[in-house]
Amino acid sequence: MRKKVPLVRLLTATAVALIACAFVSQYSKVAKITREPDASLPFYTGLVWRHSSHAYALPVLVLLFGVFFLRRSGAESVGLECTISVAWIAALLWILFALWAWELPLIQLHN
Image: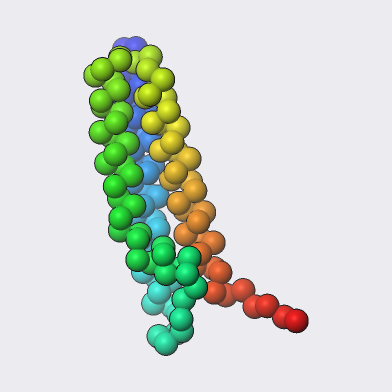
């Protein structure tokens, strides 16, 4: 029973990272459709638009590193804990960065 808890935590972190990537991909598609066709996008918005599909490497890497640390060191591995923590933080930051980047063009600056 004790060995299953880290595996469940690893699978949950991987699922959260996958859901974050899917959310950013879908949000980017919807946000691009709702913009004017000839409007230029800021650098960060274009970065999210171009690289949202590359972020799917995060859940794959989390799962690979997590399984590696589980098999190598067992359930009490610092590497496993770091992998799970990085997955949660990266998923949250990716969503926040994408929301900020897509809302950035809507900001109206007044002098």
